[in-house]
Length: 107
Image 1 (tube, one colour):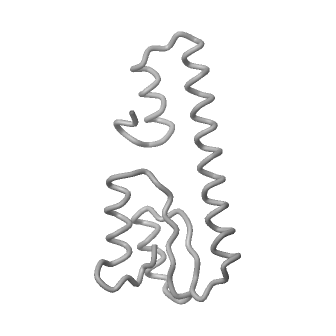
Image 2 (cartoon, one colour):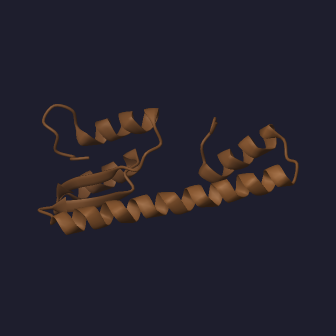
């Protein structure tokens, strides 16, 4: 997400996206924009890349963010499978996922 979007502020765009979907957002901004980076993190950005950036740096950052998300999903899947084998109810599983992710209504 470019924080310097011309019409809609990148921070507000990040907030709006994350209200709708739980996706990782990587903030793009000028290297000296510390305030923007702090605001982007508060809005939910999980990483940042300073401009100018190389293609390799951008791709590496995105790959690291996606790998972390994959590890989180694998952990949650393992937890859910274990709870199903133990005979836990849907309500118990949903509660555990909500607690693990910090999200209410994690269905």
